[in-house]
Image 1 (cartoon, one colour):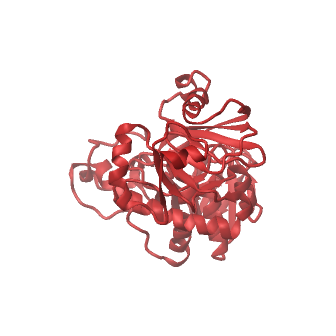
Image 2 (tube, one colour):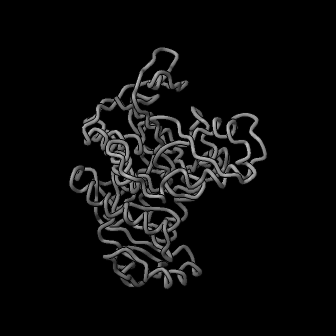
Image 3 (cartoon, helix red, strand yellow):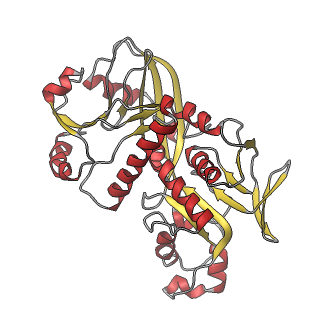
Length: 374
């Protein structure tokens, strides 16, 4: 049996593709409700990444193409492909858009000010419109996927590997598994994962009632969805403060509402519900997918690696991580989960852009000695 710990979008998709590959899978979470944290609070916008090219943009857009196909084919009732308009944040960003255009995901359209005005956007110079993009109903989609899986509530306190099995331990019970996938998000205290640099990225979203019929979604330094059944989503993933509620003075949507009001009529928006949660991101902003280095063993057996010496990597047996998806969790999760499942079940090599090994050597050479787990 494979046990996936964490029922956010990463863990849910890992369990889904492992089960599809024929494995017996148990998904566990400290809550009995899937996506009870950052994934449930996500706006879940499914759109390409813009920029001047490079590995992260290329990987993101590969993941977008797969996610777009996957959601439309298997969970179409929870994916809304109304298109997403990417808008420059400011005049400087507007100039950068000229550099971004050659690297845009296809198909796309270049919108001008007049076309933006035609859909009810004011003070907007235009932007890039991606007709295949859209957004998902985050909690509803997660619940729909989990209906095909086995989910149990368990607050994991420890992981121990003995006699060829992982022992997953809580105050009330123990579970044994042949393989464990850690999809615990920004809270990654069960093992020494310091080299991955996993950090929390706070996000807020509000769902509003409105009579406006907004036909597309948009993204600036916030995101606004199209209107569905008299409801519209406004949100952003942006706060990097250790106590985000203090950073926003307990009003996470106030700044977003003000920004939205600058470009469109929000006068009849009535807040129905507020969602907040923490996403996880890696040290270099690429996903973390694959085996985990046994950090204590490496430092004990090869202390010279902190001074630049080479040594063969030693991994924790039959354990994988699936983490660091950042604010694009619903874009990255399906493709990354498929690749992880292929690696676990058939030994398919992992893409080096997502393999956690990429971060170990840089990290270990920055520490002088190992004292205790941070």
